[in-house]
Length: 66
Image: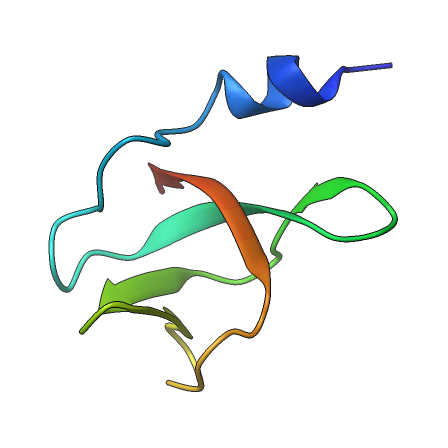
C-alpha cells in the first residue's frame, strides 16, 4: 500500500502550474488521497475541471502535468 507521503512526492506542492495548462490533481478527503479522473486547470486562484470549466470544491494536495 502506498503511503500518503509517497503519493505526494510524485506531485508538485510548492507552486502553481502555468496558466492555461491542464494538470492531474492529487486530492484528499475523509476517505484518503486520490487522483481526479479528469484534467484540471488553475485559473484566477481557483482549481477548475478543465472539461466542464466548473470550480472544484475539494482539498488539493498537489499537481503534475499530464
